[in-house]
Image (cartoon, rainbow, N blue to C red):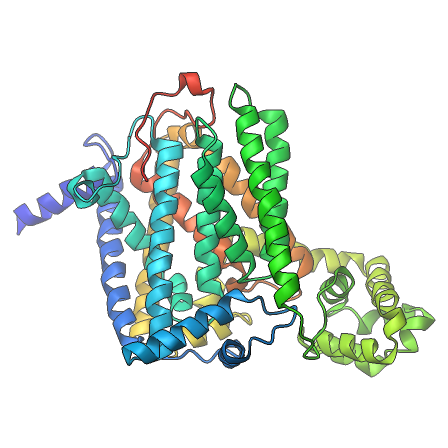
Amino acid sequence: MHQCLGDLSRRSLHFFNVKDKDSLVMQCLCMGVLVLMWLQIIIAALWAVSNMHVIVPYGDVCEYIRLAHTMILDTWRPIAYPLFVRFCIVAGHALNMPFYTVIYILQNGISLAAVYYLIQTLWVCFAGGTHPLPKLTFQSFLGTPERRKLLFLSLFAASNPLLMHFNFSCLTDSLCNSFSMLFVAEVLMLMRSSKLEWQHIFLGIISFVLMCLLRAERLMLMGTIVLALSLVLVFVMKGPGKKRVIASMMLMILIAVPVTSLIKNNTQTANVGRLTPSVHTALYQRVGYRHFFDNYDYMPENVTRNITRYDAFYNDVSQLNTNTICAAVLQNDPEHYNQILDSVWITVLIHDFYRVARDISIDFICNVFAPAVYNIVTLHPITTTDLTLGRMTYGTPDLAWFYMRVSEITFWLFAATFALRLIRNKRFFKDYGLLWIGLGAFVIMQSVFYAGTSNYGFHIRYQLFNYSLQIIAFIFAFGVGTRNDRFLKDESSISPIRKPI
């Protein structure tokens, strides 16, 4: 028994690059984290088998099934997921299994592949200098320590209960999250490549188009982020590779955005009575929600003529009611719809700036720290995100509860161990400096986007990509260890490494 424990200890220390001279506390923490990581993977597999025939009762599920048959799409529903559901219905019929089981199998497979590819890309871009990753072959996949570690880290990240929950839901979130991860990986590869790599440009275009055709807001969010990144590189990047990197980025986005827009404009042509997304509506919903009734007396005449005091009160009761009020205004006075909504949010902003700024700031902070906030307010419901918790435990409540508790304990122990390593090893700041800067910039930009355009408050479903990217980045850095940072330097100073396929 003592020998087995000693062997487990040595394996865990070797896995996390912990030296014998490190403190006993660090050694015990690392061993505990490794055991919990394995436990989470095993429980995730049991949970997955138990939920293959469970349909999570989200309100959008019935609509996606209907759209898969009719293909009558408005501006709220891009075409990719209805097509995916239709394919799974046909495949399920041919395989004699429920269509949603086919959906779950495909979504989980794509999710795991995306996680593996993203961690592999992070490894190549940020740790290839001192911890080279062998080229992916049949022999190296499980035959080399680096590839085995990569697979284990990928299984752990992909077995996260939140990712698994959406993988087992008939919603766009899983596939959109997967293709978003692939897109980020391709952007990193373009920034790291020593030449113009058309395969990464092509895969970047494909992943961008697919993620935007799964969730509509990705077109504005990710397009803006890539354009901003390209602009930053113009002033920051040095060396002969600068023009090649910027040209690759701009070529990718300048092809992907028009292609996406062309498909959307020719497929989302129906009108089923829902509001068309617009800046005016978004600002009204973001600023006016919860603050309309208290500022009704300050509203100009064009507002009070169309919206009653009771309407303002009804608007503030629930964020869903803002759509109802907007629809009523559009029906009563369509010619002045934008002006009326603009009058509302401008008036509220003038007379109630402090409360609006406070609400947006709280949403922004929660979005930035999505992994920690999820483990506090979703797993221990104190906000509206308990809806997500109820759906996560829908099929197998007891097993799901145990699964999420194990994951929560693993998260906090992992966070404590990582924080201790940062304190004791300053190279984590230096060697992964560009990773932290890039991750921080992305998290801040997407947090500003959602906090500034959505009146849902903190909702983990809409922070899934932010959550996933943070979790994966920290798992990668913790599992691979420190190195000399050579990312994005002059190619002549970069030692040659074998790029994985």
